[in-house]
Structures are given as structure tokens and as C-alpha cells.
Length: 166
Image 1 (spheres, one colour):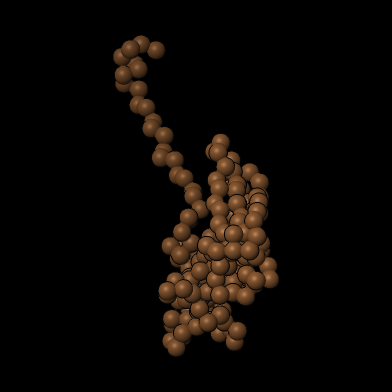
Image 2: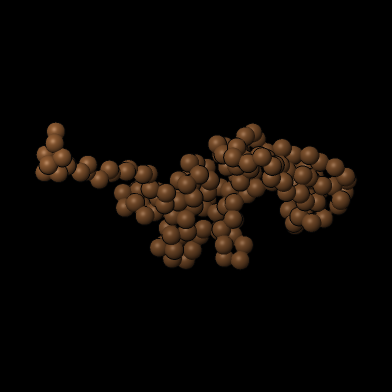
């Protein structure tokens, strides 16, 4: 092929590649949102709905439940299993420590499960919790004591290690 022929040759540009990505924010997917809202509405009718989610307004109760359903979807959990482990503090929904530990332990980004090391006694009883992300060389560590973390929950007097872990 001569240079002139090459210049006159029409080059077909490849079509733009389409990338299909799962929506990282479930409530922004209208199909998922509609289904999640149906689950939240059914959940809001439960007679044993946690006080943290109850409201005088049906719409608010549904919206409160939707927040839990959304989190369950993001954590790949059953929303009805998660709803029993919520509480409210200062108008914010919180999740029990055992749920957070389960979420972390099931996360494929950590090499192994959370590791707990205990020392001391009484109010100075201490836990050191560690885990290593697969992409990092150093362990991530958090530590706390009974004196620093104790709440009014009576389980602190009967099972401090479990409470420290949570």
C-alpha cells in the first residue's frame, strides 16, 4: 500500500466501550430504591420495631426503616436481621458492636478475622483489637479499657471482655 493509499484509507474508530458498574449507592438505583422502600414500609409495620425507628408519622417510620434497609443492602445483610441491632443516640442511628465486628470480619479486604488481646482487671481491663488489610503491610490497631468505654449497660459487670470486643 502506497503512502497516498494509506492517507486516503478511512480508519474506523472503535465504538466507545460501555462499562457496566454495579451502583455503589443502592438508593440512587430507582429499581433498587423502590424495592427497598417496599421492604422498609413492611418493616415499619412490625409491632416490635425498635424504638429508635418508631415515629408518630407513618412516613417518618418508613424513612427510618429505609435507612436500615439501605445499610443492610450495602453490608449484604438481611434487613430484618439488622433491624434488631439498631439504637439511636443524639438523633443518629447506631449499630451494635457485634454487628460492626461481623461486617469487618466478613470484609474481603482484611486478611483474617479481627484479633483480640486482653490484659488487666477491673476498670483497667484492656483490649487491643487488630487486623491487617490485604493491601497494607502494617496492622491496624485500636485499644480501649473498661474505664474508657463502659456504659450503663449491665453486661459490663458480667462480661467485660465481650463488651470490650463489641
